[in-house]
Amino acid sequence: MKNKTIIGGIIALTVIFLIALLCLWIGKKINNSIRGTQDTTETTQTNGEPQNPSLAPNSPEQAVQIFLALGNPSNASASDPNNYLLVNNYFALSYNRDKAIPNWVAWRISKAELGNFPRPNPDPFRPDNRLPKSWTRATPSDYTGSGFDRGHLCPSADRSGSIEGMSATFLMTNITPQFGDLNRGPWQKLEAYLRTLVTRGSDVYIFAGVYGERGKLKKKVSVPTNDWKIAVAVPSGAPISAINADTRVIAVDMPNVKGILRADWQLYRTTVRQIEQRTGYNLFSNLPPSLQDTLENKIDIDNS
Image (cartoon, rainbow, N blue to C red; front, side):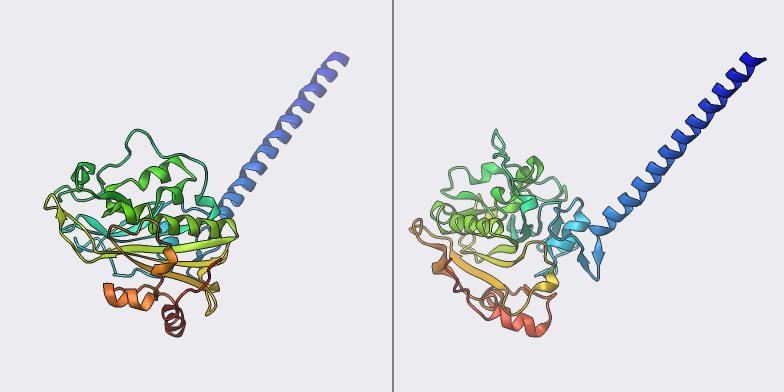
């Protein structure tokens, strides 16, 4: 009888222990579920803005919220083949089917998007299979022997935080023909400078594009006369609503020509408004009109 009582007690204690473990496990699952919901909410919009704007987007929907936070300059959409909107987790762009190059590309550089991943190997340039199958696609070989570089609009170094991001910049929908003196000269110098702003504590929102035509490669790929870029620097982690009349805006318009390899990027500074007049775009359409006027009409003078 005594043994039975002891055995019964042991069984009861075991059951109580197992029930306690089960309750603890269920509690953790519920807590993790709540935390996961909160984490997801933090990266979605509140009043039209991501609560954690410095986080790299993890979906095309979040990419639109971040990269086009200042606006869609040409109202690009999936219905216009010459103003065709393409979005991935690394940049958004307007593609021109008839020119076989992008009209513009939009992205954001934050510390979350910078890292040490090297350029992919072998040659990573490739056609973009997201384009409709009936369209003629630009290929790396279209540039072979042309005398032009395959020039990135969103540079690979701006997406060095992941292999996937780095690789995405080599899609031909992000590439335009650039003379080597532009691509490896002032254009590259500005790219590097904007990354230094991130290391100093800024998030930098960028539009880059082209206009004009000086001919075509293999009767397919348009060669632009000019490459332009606009960068807006905000404190790291700050939302777009933090932009004010004192926010630094850099706008450049560079000729796609030979002979400028050693030129400084500062030589080509201009205003956003002048770029709008040359392209027909509305670049800060999501900002209040009075703030647009202020920012679009000033020329950057900071040489630091």
